[in-house]
Image 1 (cartoon, helix red, strand yellow):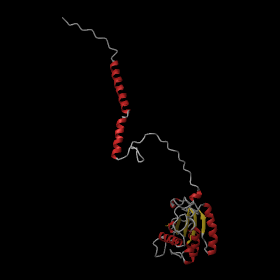
Image 2 (cartoon, rainbow, N blue to C red):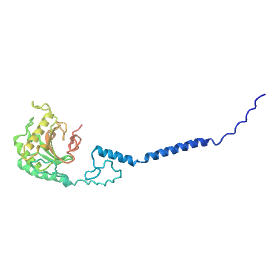
Image 3 (tube, rainbow, N blue to C red):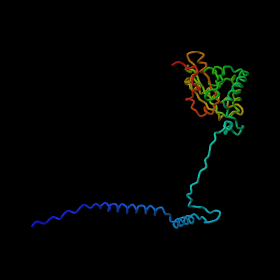
Image 4 (cartoon, rainbow, N blue to C red):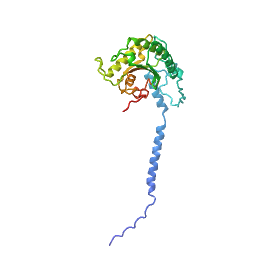
Length: 277
């Protein structure tokens, strides 16, 4: 006889309770673990602190007692407002040498005062053709090479010593850095002493710087020397007048911006009468 099949069991709709119960149990275990981890054992903490004190020979009490376990209280940092430096305070130079009092850092109002005084003193000294103007980098004193140097020479003439002394006396009271920059026209140098206009322009700038540095009470650490040859003209080299203007040594009393800016990026020394391309 064939065995009778047992009737199928009805589906159990409560099976999800098993998985849910496991999930709740695990979730409870997680929170219990987190709670246990958040509790600090004060006894163990005191033991650790005591071991540190013993290791470093720190007294528990007294004037020299040290707390090795710092408090974790939040400390509010007070707000500090940094005020801008007043111009009058900025003008005082912190780098004046021991042989002279601290000088003033000349500003725009000082530049015009220097120009007015120099024009009178240079005229009295018989120095002609010196151009004085204020540019983006500071006060520019442009010395024509035809007046201050012999043709093809890099040494200041003896007749120009008086004019340079007047300029040095006018710039000595101030703390601004000074840049001496030599320039020439595009005529190839014919002197055997110089291989190119670069050397000639640099030698003329160095000669002017030396003349300033040799003046009494003038700080030579303020000076820098550059030679640009024919590559920074301020006039057209196609005319005699333009070549005379390009042959020059500029003494620049640098302002606070010109002291840190790259001279190559300045627009002050760009040609005021640009030569044609």
